[in-house]
Length: 453
Image 1 (cartoon, rainbow, N blue to C red):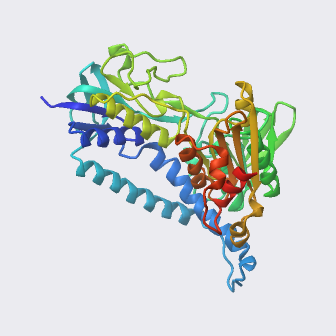
Image 2 (image 1 turned 120 degrees about the horizontal axis):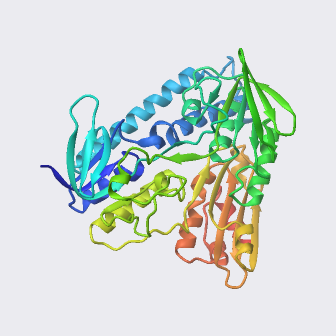
Image 3 (image 1 turned 180 degrees about the vertical axis):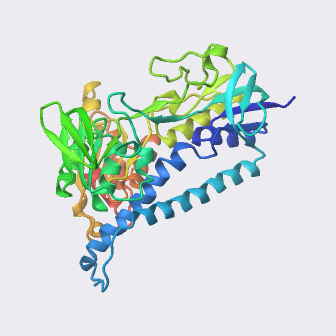
């Protein structure tokens, strides 16, 4: 009988980070996944999309090569099939890296579907061999999520697709409608627009990326229009008709649109079916997410949860953090989750980085707000890089000058925002941030100048 300190069901960031961190604390761990290691982030999400977006970024710069004083003698064009092939190589190399990390820390991996039988027993179901049971002191459910779909718009993988398909297309669609103005929809709209598709994006709410500061939403919509991405907000798709090679879109306001493909990007649904939760009485919300406390423990004392199945913030780095919290608690180190300083990055053009409260959220909870702002076009480095679009916005408490939120639209914004995370974590005031010397010329000077404003 094999028994482990931690049995992890799911090989994504939440699962493999929890296993590695637990192994560092001398815990015997095994990861079960019916596919492989890396999860959605590595195979269908973060890494594939960023590889493709990086390719599109190079194409964008080649188009304006003359602005850099470079004359291109030969023509160039995007090759989506080649982009996807290069992306796949990157994914394969990173997957090998995760396997090596597990091996170096003594973490075992088994391919199969993990199903909880009892509070200390997990059955591994594998098509290539007989089922077998693994015994556990602790179980972590980290089974991730999948693209949310609508029964009225069935996914066929050809004309109506999800992000899973969008990162693996080999032919550039001439006309594309993106349904959903969140970060996934906006990133893929940006990518396909850059490589030559005529892109439309529709969002039922009043703005794109509506969960972020309204200044970011407004700026992104203006930039999309400059890039000739056709933005429709406060509109809904009422029907889709596929006619030969065309997809006819019906909007609720009576308007129609013909495209080649429709990308449904309306969020994600947790993978909690078929893993045996009902066998041990783990409580699940109506939307499929699993209930847990601040220690990531479910209502069953030795069963934990981390990653997208928690449903709090469906981001890979949050999943890794939740996995870390699990590893601490099963090792006897009391730890509680804190979602107050989670940065997010959206890899549109320009990039978006955000952490903490938006101006609207700060006001809604009764804060006396002070706004500090600086436009990126005021930076020498931005002009040298030919990327002058964007701003830095700091939301502060007017009473004590504490930083409540930092929001950046700029080249490399997803990297720059971590200065805000560090400042907020360390209790650094807005005025103090402005007195810290920043190297010149850098984009990070924008944070200093915003703080000084």
